[in-house]
Image (cartoon, rainbow, N blue to C red; front, top):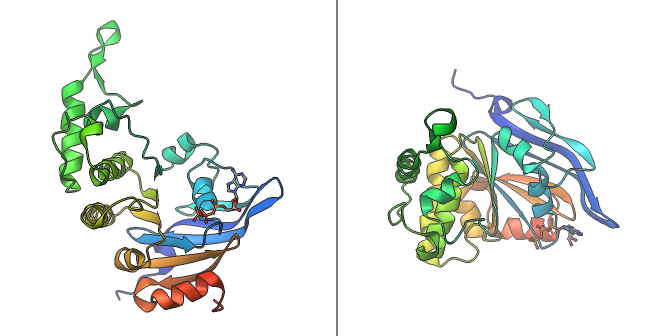
Length: 254
Ligand SMILES: Nc1ncnc2c1ncn2[C@@H]1O[C@H](COP(=O)(O)OP(=O)(O)OP(=O)(O)O)[C@@H](O)[C@H]1O
C-alpha cells in the first residue's frame, strides 16, 4: 500500500495560539499545520495576524496561550535561538544581511568556523568560503563569488542569499515573510527557484505572501487567516484566486 498517513507527514502544529498586545487581540486561537517537504502558504488581509503567528513560531513572540508541536513533541520557542535549536529558521523581512561583509561572512556571522587548538585557534576562512559556495550552488543560487560584498548584490540575489543562509544550518523549517514583495519578475522567479529547491531538499517552508499567483504556484497547502484565526485550509491544486479572496474577506464561509 502506498497511502500516506497525513499525520505522519506533519512536522509542525500550532494549536489555539493567542497573543494580545495591550487591548489588541492579534491572535484569537490560531491553529495551523505544516507538512514535511511542503510549502505551506499563509495568507490573509492586513492585520489578520500572519506576522504575529510566524513571530510566535520564530521565537520572537511568546504566545499567551496555545501549543506548538514539532515532530509530535510540544516545544517552547522562548527565543529565536530556541526556535533555531529546534530547526526553525526565519528569513527576516529586512533580510538581516550585513552590507559591508562578503556573502560568505554573512553566512557565518555569529557562528564562525575555527581551526587549530587552544590559543592557536584561528578563523577557518577557507572552510567558511567553501561551505557557503557549496550551499549556494546546491540551491542553484546564482550569485557573484562568495567573496563579493553583499552591497553589490541585487535585491533578488540578497533574498536568495538570506534564504540559503537560513537553510544552511540543517533547518527543517524555514519561515519567509513576503520574500518577493520588493522584487521584479525575473528576481521573483529566481527566489521562487530557491524556495522550490529547499522543498526538494525536504525542508518545510512557511510562506507569507499577498501574491495569490505565487501562492498557487509554489505551495501545496494554503491557510487563510482572518481576524486572528486561521479560518480555512485549502490544497493549492483544489482552489483558486477567487475562492481565496472570498475566504480572506469572509464572503465565503470556510
Ligand atoms: N507589537 C505589536 N504591538 C501592538 N500591536 C501589534 C503588534 N504587532 C501586531 N500588532 C497588531 O496585531 C494585529 C495583527 O497584526 P499582524 O502584523 O500580525 O497582521 P498581518 O496579517 O501580518 O498583517 P500585514 O499583512 O499587514 O503584515 C494588527 O492589528 C496589528 O496592528
